[in-house]
Image 1 (tube, rainbow, N blue to C red):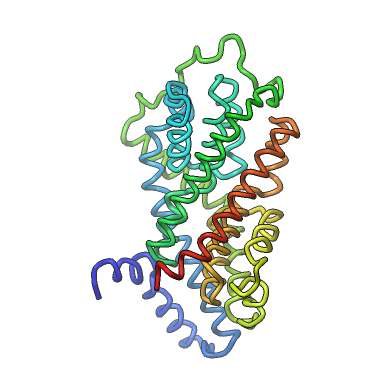
Image 2 (cartoon, rainbow, N blue to C red):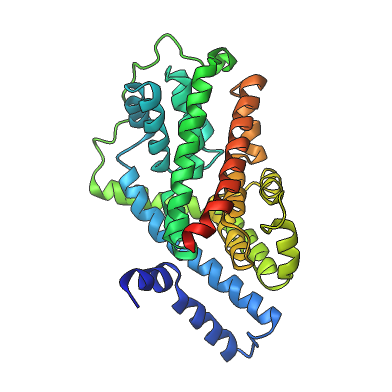
Length: 338
């Protein structure tokens, strides 16, 4: 077994944990060869695996992110405009710990500071899409190829979406309270310069606690749904609805995703189960992107900041981009892997 295969299966995939859970259940008298036994093993293994990875990765990533508080991010973005600004906004979105809902307050801070609208939307699209911890977990489950594809497509969609919105010149579609005030840009008080290593460690620990508190219930729900898909719904049913033979599979996955309010970590078990049932990579990407970027609570929060025309443009761009990405990957990914 080469080094990467070992990392993917035993470190990130934690197959040793699956074997340990199976042995423990067998010792307790459960038959893990039955549907119920397999579902129980899947649930315990997947939940514990994601929780362990999430705790470790959030701690490490939060320590790095302690150098990039919102005020510093805002100052960095304020210096760059145009396509370069959109690319920078999308890349910064990948290293900031915000889900679709918690990105909205940061978005308001950016608009009040007078940052270009395209840059703020590139950040808003990228931030919930591309979570570094989730990407590492994705690599352990689906392989590095699909994880990298998820990152690249998320960033590309964020850059394209921000560029389109910038050129539509809809600054007047921002609600009055979120527009720049006369003293915007005058404060640089939110600096991390005074943080000690101990304070950064404390901050990272707090981020782990806050993140786990926020997402654990979505992980539980996601793992339960994943176990249902994995062991109880026949493969031919899944294939009929979301398989490559259904030309509307990506559309269905996107539509199903929008009403769901979950962190990306809650979508991973569902995506894992769909992947095991042979659902196309593009359909899975469409589902995950739809959940992370277009949940109803985040859309409702965004509506409080932007007017209907800009909100409709944002949703049209994101939904259209997700569907293009989904169908493109359903076509390309099998050839690439083959």
